[in-house]
Figure 1 (spheres, one colour):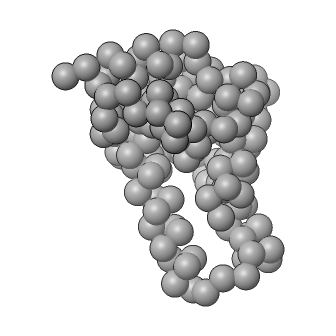
Figure 2 (cartoon, rainbow, N blue to C red):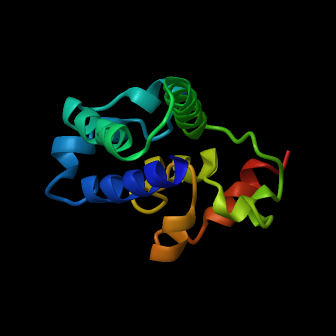
Length: 148
């Protein structure tokens, strides 16, 4: 479910950044250039419809128990809030570890809000790395955020 949701999110999020769609779907969310946890779910109703689309995919394509559905949604909400914290929880050099280079971080999403381009992923950096949309200054920014 995480892989499906991450793929869905990356591509719909990137699409909402298209100049013809951005103002209609995604501008409200990007009014938070230095996001807080409150920004995690501050978005236009049209964006909410797009975001909810993945759950329809799950309902019809992924057999699961109601408990799994609840656990996944709880994880999704928690990770989205983490992405909008405005500070980093992962330790120094996590971004350079074998696993950490593929995990999305609060620093990555904060950069997305600052610069509006790149770093489109939700849970993972897989699509950002494969599609070349991870910001070149991501590692430096992560280092700077975790220096203390």
